[in-house]
Length: 305
Image (spheres, rainbow, N blue to C red):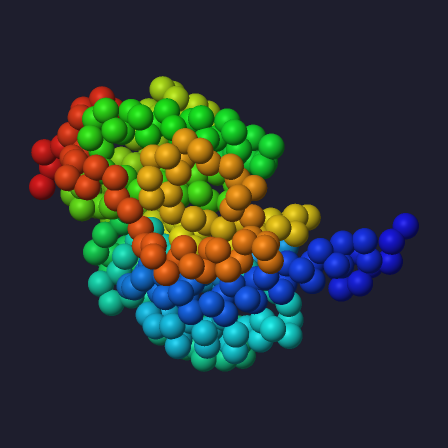
């Protein structure tokens, strides 16, 4: 039997401390913070803790490194509380971003004015959207199944390349994400109550890929408030003391030769990744491509205005 200390046994407390050390060092790296901020412009920022779900916070706004630092280090007192969050951003991009966030946790949880703002945003956020990107989530469920998720991702990638479909592909920590920017799609309503909304259109594409390629394609993620792991952040999972780097794959060989253990952050590879990040951003394959052929295969009208 092991004695429990702060929710962790003496057996795994050393691994937990190593995880905390790497986590703090990663987000203390300037190049990492700059890459994160690029993804947050006019989008919702969310801190999700799967180990401590009640500590998770959504509807954050962060458009600068300074503000990001304030949220992560000061607002949540993360250094002292040792709550480790996976960082997410919204697929929706808003005209003026989300409402300004309170500056203290007391305001966040007890301020009546902010509660009213959050309630209003919950029901009316879609009215402020200017775009909503498409994501395909290839979910392994367990790291033991990553090889199967990789095979599915390669097969879908080859199909997209054949049709000249524009896409980004990223490792998500326990699977892969394809991202296709909204600008490549026809116009659909952002109103989730509208029969012809964009979320149903995206889901129809996902179900087609599910049927044609693999049941690892998640078809239940299409709603107006969906958030996604931010590229270059760390994915964390309960009962697992590794930090998985959510890394964009910039070459086809990067996916073909993918080994998930190479994307576990360690003291040995930390400096290597710091150097790589300074030279990286995001990469859109088939940037001059169009969605016409895929939409035709799925049976979606591409002539909407």
